[in-house]
Length: 304
Image (cartoon, rainbow, N blue to C red):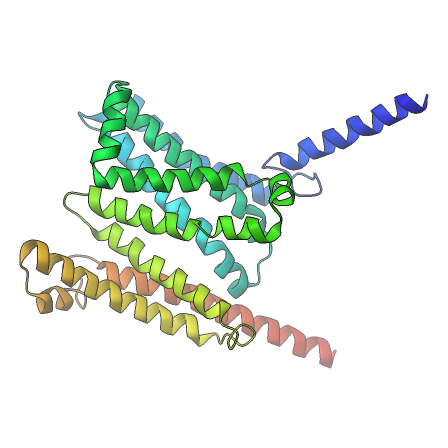
């Protein structure tokens, strides 16, 4: 009888652990609408690419186009996962931390799919794929980023956190900063004409790393002012504009001042520097509004 009860309890424990591992359940094993919506949103880009492929909307080189589109989404998801911690701190929205792991794993899945589609595009010639990765530097850089994402995904479970220990686990997962940088470099090197999105990614990377540096500073750790992310956003936008001017100056011989002047007009659409600054300022403004709401709430509670 006691043995049966032990087995029953063990089975329930395993079932509860299995439920907690499902992305649509929270840590307590309860169905989460927020996590489910995030999961669906993460699947939408892949579903759209698949739909376009089956309907012949990806052009004459459909698989090659799918390679690029899935790869672009992989980089976006890497950056989205990096943005979770700053957004949580600024917006005081703890639910965001519940989906960070899910977004990180999704980024790995998209990167892996990016590689698999490349193999398909090369007619499953694995020798050629391996040779290309070794001898074409931008592919080598992308492959190293994939290895980093693989390590992140393989150690993303609670069990791996316990096995590695919190300190070692955090040290390992900080390599995602290098992975994100390599992904941006890979993005830059593989585009042939329009570098607007790689420039935006580079600018946002600068802001995300700058924010982490501020948050980790002993002097500012508990006194990070709401205006600091906004100033950092303006700096990131300025550096993006300078990077664009430098790129076109070296590659096309374009006068740097003319490239910089283009950032102050919209004849060519919003330039990467403007996009970077706008995104960073919007997040900083949302954080400031959230802080004001908290202060008003505390004042109302004291006077009630």
